[in-house]
Length: 393
Image 1 (spheres, one colour):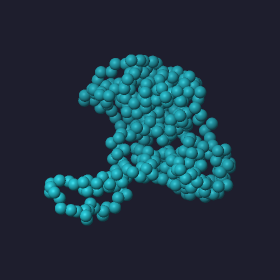
Image 2 (cartoon, rainbow, N blue to C red):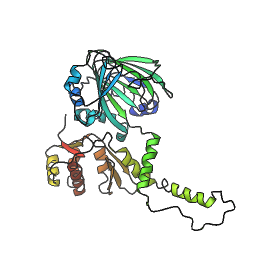
Image 3 (cartoon, rainbow, N blue to C red):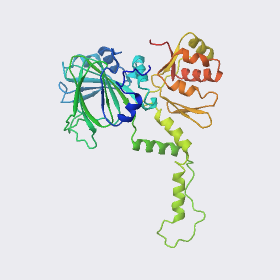
Image 4 (spheres, rainbow, N blue to C red):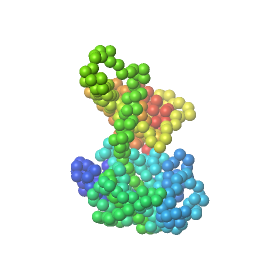
């Protein structure tokens, strides 16, 4: 999906990134004019009942205690027994489950694809909400159905105070700087750690939350250290074959310190290794979702025939993709935590396959005579990482 001219109001993507991204909130009226929710409330409830789908139900009232938090999968009786008001159901990774929702993400291509985490969809009857809270990541809140009143602050909250003894993390003293009622197609952008509170204003309110990955420094360092450990000789040990008699037996000398510094510096001085680690790290699927290989492999001829007949390819339900260009013209394609090194003659495939949720046949046909390209497609399709699919348009 190309970026609609209305998505950021009267701002260009460059202006938005320079003036708002991770800096201050932005309310956009008519971001997606005439937007119609790809999902009905009943369909979202159906997803919340499926095994392997991460879903939550928050009841401000009508549960076993105020602000009760329940985790799915649910069943039909769970929804039939809900009170008339003041509850919310939330389903994560709806973009991985519903292709029409995934296609919304192409409208946000002014931010690198690998930064996008998922699309969470929430449904609430009148007065449904999850309490005032903060998120540690950027989020676009697109109103899909009904109306929701949002209140939000203008400055990030660094030291929040949480209401004690609740299932949900709710801000104790929330004071809004601004508020607005969002209707279908309206959108609110919030940088990390901006306090906000949204309340449904009618009996069928659906909000699409496009969230972005923001791993903590602790998570990044821990994962890199694990990566480095896996590539370290387990039998290698500290040694000092040139040891001299110390002036002070209790002192850690310069030679010992230099040996340790050299070892630890070797973990980070190789930029190429760091790049490969990060490409693998940032494309690793979360929430224990894995690609499912096809039950029967397709041949390269099958792939060519399907594309020539009009089928494109789209990301599989559990697929994360990114790539890194190299100075020698090659590229590393990262797929669900694994690296595929593409030679300079096939490196063009990296931006082609990672740039959009759905790649139409017209974009693929020019490369079907390239055996390396069709072989790559065959591998990715048979492993369930890409799927042959007709256009949804």
